[in-house]
Amino acid sequence: MYSHWNVQREDRIAVVSINRPPANALSQETLKELNALLDELENDSQVKVIVLTGEGRFFIAGADIKEFTQLEPQDAEAMARAGQKTFDRLETYPKPIIAAINGACLGGGLELALSCHIRLAAPEAKLGLPELNLGLIPGYGGTQRLPRLVGRGRATQMILTSEMIGGEEALRLGLVEAVYPLDQLVDKAKELALAISQKSAATLRLALEAIHTGVIDGLTAGLEQEAKLFGQAFATEDMKEGVSAFLEKRKPEFSDR
Image 1 (cartoon, helix red, strand yellow):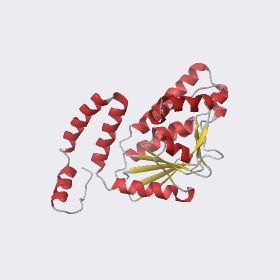
Image 2: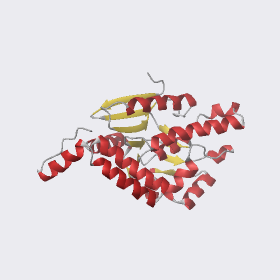
Image 3: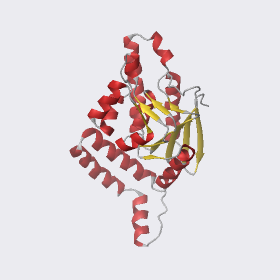
Image 4: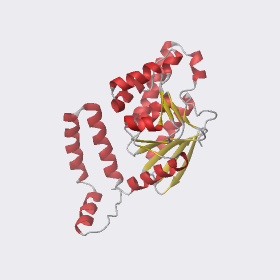
């Protein structure tokens, strides 16, 4: 169904891998397919968590530069807005998305990873925003999301120098949450996804929304939204089940309602 994305479903987890040799570059068609895939997975009640990775030696090595040669300035702006819209959707997606960064994660690839909820990496992964080498700047949210994770100064240095960092340095900076050997990376991501999938889909969605509100709109708005969503959680069947299970000293059996 998809030319550039492979999907494997198992244990309420969807492992999504980009497969666009040689470098898994993000073309406009690839982004359109990603949007369609996100539609499909959002509506699939059997999928609670998504793991996103790359086939081969690359995670995503950036945008498809060949497409840039025919763009006028207004076309480039429209392309940036379309990419930002897709990555905004990842960041606000109602199901957790874990990026398993297996190799080169550059330009649009890093911007995609920055939009995921959790990032894991292999030591040999290379992360960076090298757009200034092309006489460009990041256009899919990199100038905004990278400073949120590593701080303004370090993000500015990485962007202005086109520096690439490895997985261990990314971990030290807080750009990724954990580093695992390459041959264990996807399995570790699936282990994390499986642990998350034991929770109620309803409260996973509410928690993601509360976290996002505070990060984007600030503490006051975040606290207001948290209280509102806390109240909504009380209206779910899974809240009743979770409290009952705790009091009865048993494991909850959530129905995702």
